[in-house]
Image 1 (cartoon, one colour):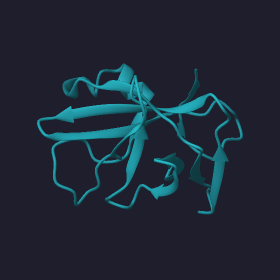
Image 2 (cartoon, helix red, strand yellow; image 1 turned 60 degrees about the horizontal axis):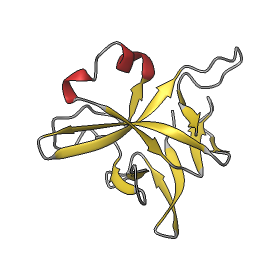
Image 3 (tube, helix red, strand yellow; image 1 turned 180 degrees about the vertical axis):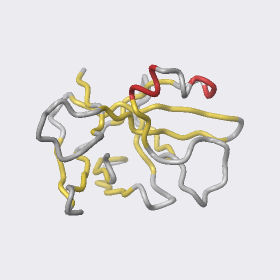
Length: 136
């Protein structure tokens, strides 16, 4: 479900894990450099936006995020981390030209980005949810 990410921002390589309340994700602006945004919301963080750091694509299509007027965004990453069923971490690199889809939402002064997830298509999948990776 993408518990950690690895990216370059301002020429600096950064590794970030979702449990850290200060976790930020790079969001590619239409023009210019990426902008860092808060990655979801944790249980003890104040705010009105949904808890967690992920948004299922099926729930987006079902309209469950509509009340926050969501916008799809590009999250340019070098790699992301998933844990297997035994709790071991595995890093997966993104190839050039690929990015993870994010969902940007804002409410009053609060704004956050969530990683969009899909259900993997493979039969022998280890993960129930996987980041939605797109190219272009």
